[in-house]
Amino acid sequence: MPFVLELVISLFLVAGALFALIGSVGLARLRDFFMRLHGPTKASTLGLGCLLIGSLLFFSFQRGALSVHEAIVTVFLFVTAPVSAHMMAKAALFRGVDKGGPSQNYPDR
Image (cartoon, rainbow, N blue to C red; front, side, top):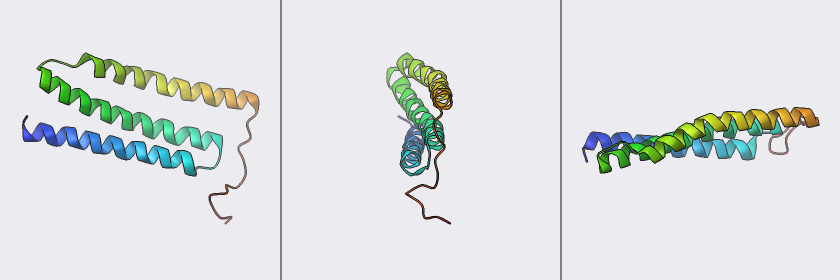
């Protein structure tokens, strides 16, 4: 495998892991439901997308042809994640979920 391809795959994997970590921290630290929904949805979608693109590049090079499995999962992820987040937000608005007050994680300012 060429060094440049290994470097690109490594960058995708590290970027994906960092975005997934940021999304997880956002889920744990943000104040209310809507903020907690926004952080992980955006960051984990991008993180998992980077991981899948890195996997797609690796297995496509190993097999000598496009790895269809990773491509299909990537497309499915990018289509369904925003739709599911939108539906959860609409359901929370319909049910009257409170935006919440100050968080216990942060001191009052």
